Every structure is written in C-alpha cells, then in structure tokens.
Length: 459
Image 1: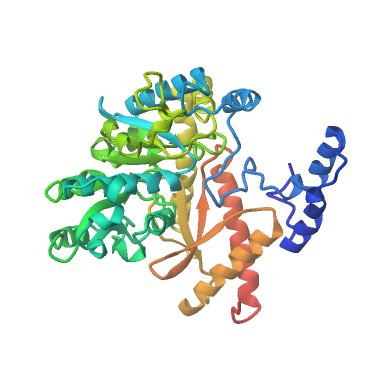
Image 2: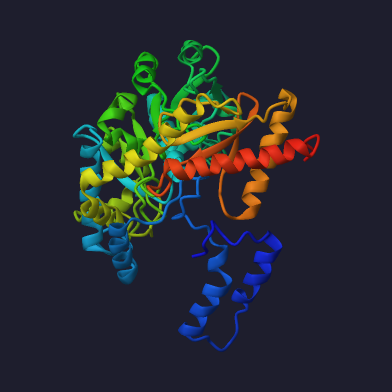
C-alpha cells in the first residue's frame, strides 16, 4: 500500500494508469506478471484504510482474526443460502445470528440474517413494515402490492432530517417515492426532535397513514444516537413499525458506559448493523435483526429446485432476497473468537476516546468551532481563522476540504449541519488516535490561514 492515504493522482491520471488492466486479449497473462502490474498500477490508487490519517469514512482494514475466516471463505467460495449449497455455511450463519441476537440483548423470539449492506437492510426492513401494515388492512402485500392500498399517496415513513440516504433509496426502489418520507427536525444535540415526532404521530390517519418510523442509532453525519426508548413509547399508541438504523452506531451498545444511549433497542421491530465498520470485518458484512423472527416469512419465496417449500434442512436464504451471497458470517465469527469480547470492547473504546479527547482539547480553541457533542466516533467542526467573516466560512470549509484531500496524505470529509458547511473527522480504526486527529487539525488550521491571507474565498 502507498505511504499516504493514496497516490494523490487526479481522475484522469488514475484512468491512464488503469486503462491497460482492462485490455482483454486472447492470450492470458501469467500470475507473476499480473501481480506486478497490479502492484504498480492499481494499488497506489487504492485508499489505505490502515493509515491513521484516514479520518473521513467508516472503512477500516480487516482485523487479523477476520483475515483467517475471509481467506477460508474465499478458498472454498461457499454460497450460504441453504443446506444444498453449504451445510456448514448455512448452519454457522444461523448459529452466528442467534448468538448476535443474544449479545445485543434482543428477545428469544428475535432472529437475524446477513445482508450485502446496510442499504439493503434498510430496504428490506421498510418492505417488511409495508407488508405488516398491509396485513392490518386485510390483504397480502406480497400478492397485491401497492394496489391493495385504498390511497397509496397517504403512506408515510417518519424519518429525521439527517436519516441515511439509503432510506431515500428504499423509498425509490419500493415504489413509494420521496414524498412518502415525512421528515422530523433535529434538536440542538442532533437527535430526532421528539416534540415534532409526537406532532406528526398525532396527525396519523387524519392526514396520512404512518406505517413506519425510522430512528438512527449513530448518525453517519454526527454520530448522534436517537432516543429509541422514548420513540418506542411514543409510537406504541399508533402502531407503526419501528426500524432502527444502527449500521454505524449499534456496535457501541456493547460498551457498558454507552449502554444508556441504546436503551430500548430490544423494542425495535427491526435493526440494521454493519460489522464491516468498527469491527474491521471484510466488506460486505451487514445484518438485519427482527424483534420477531417469524416476520422473515414475509419475504419467503420458494422454487421447485431451490429453497423448496417444506424442506427441513437449515435455509437462511429464505430470510432475504439474494439466492447467492458470500459466507460473511465466517470472518465475523473468527474475528470475535480471535479478539474475545474484551478485545472487541477495547477496539470500540479506542475510536470513541480519540474523538472525545479531541473534542475536549478543542473546547477552548478560538479558531475551531465544534458543532456536535460526540456520542460516538464522529466530530464536526469549522475552522475560523481570526478576522474571517461569518458569510465566508462555508466557502472556506469547502476549500480547506478540497485542498487537504487533493494532497493525498490525509483524508477528511465535509457535511452540512443547520445550513453550515462543516469539516468532519471519523475514527473507526484503532489506528486513528487523538495524536493523529490533532495532526489533522494542525493541517486544517495551516491550510485555512494560507487561504485567508490570499483574499476572498472563491470556489
């Protein structure tokens, strides 16, 4: 891997280097020569997630124990949807799902399935919510679809303003459209505003029909965790399906000191989680948990030769659409066995403590404004060199972001909070220490000062 985050090349330069890799010819290339070409042309342009300067997204290199499982899964190339294609794979996945339900404190009736990503997990959860709502209306959604609803335009999903964009994807792919998303504002601590939520629920059935509420357990913008216990209590009188998007944040519920943030997760009808984030499990590794595992029957599809109705053998593939998917449970199992739960907790604490320590240091910094109180491993801030006018700050953050990322030695991200552009630093890897974060802050400060001396900020 390159010494920096990546080569720093621009798109046209990367294109030039990689074009020959897809020069498919009749005569093959030896593995040694092929490997050398990949090392010279491709690897320099791949992001190096293991570097402490990678602080922009939720990616990390696989943990050592995860490599063991990943290599074994690759060597045997197992499909794991049912007993027919992998007896060991199907059984291990089922055992892993049950153990994870227990680990997260879910009920005995709960169950889970592995997914390709949190995006697909959110999509399936909202499909299940639709199916459940249709049942209350007296029809089978898997048979009649949207035509079974008297007025599909009244169907609404309550979400917060910074709900993950995959929920919007779900609305697109399920035929609901973006108008089905009813957005609830955020409080000053970047959580779903419960007053607005209650107001929206009070208008249920009179103005629209809320069939699903989505709360976020670890916003991908700020890392904040919605108050799921209170959301559940508020929803109980109205009956919508409660889905919790914990793709990023759910892992932190395993820490005793963070448990209070996740009180009530066992009450959610469905929860999504991505072990390929903090756990360092190879992509893809995502799960969808259901409070009542029998609800997975709502996606069952049988065929005459595969997933046959009445088969008594383990058949985890009935719980999600893909008829072929990787053995994602194995790297997760080997990683947890290698680290032990104590090791997992140590790994999780490292990312939270690094961000927390940085936040404390920046509290008294006159040139850095922190815009969130970190619940987890994300901090959002603005750099404000002395003399910079408020109306120039958004452009300044944009220019700082572009300059730092273009150099290829550090990776940060940018977001918008309350109409303000902010710089965003993330820690999911144990490599991202407070020292590494402080180094990035120093770079941000230096770039901002140079820009502020060069005149008005023009994009």
